[in-house]
Length: 181
Image (cartoon, rainbow, N blue to C red; front, side):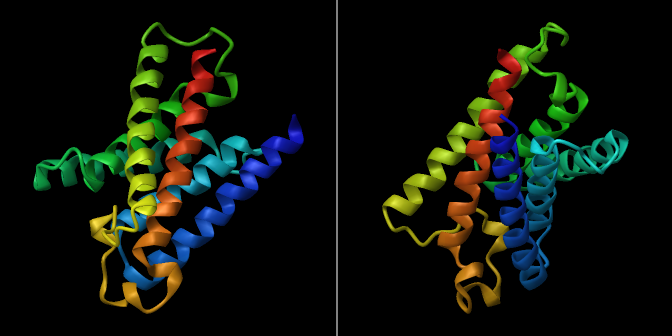
């Protein structure tokens, strides 16, 4: 269904635009990683990816390394640094395993278990963000995004960030699950 891929790519571009606005306002490394993930997912859903695979590999390898360093510094694998690590590793996995060929049984033996673990991490983060929205908590799921400007505009608010994270993690988890079929 090419039209569905187009809709999903468009949705990822909208999320990318949101993260670009948030990045411009906060100069947060976390927002930069979320922007890269949104653009990468849009490219994966699109019928033609204008960015060569080695570029995506370099981008997501750098994001994964940065997130791993953040987890080591914060010793918080369950919070935002952990989510950035799981998300970056998920994107790197999808690029490295050739997401376009996912689901055709041509991947290595470790690909399906890795996809399942990464999809579970995405589902967990999506649930955390959704629960924050449902309970009206104003705590930001991306603590690194909390900046002085965060309360000045709705696009910079914590609820907007939590909603964007929930949508993005759900989409990423679904994309990873396609590697299991």
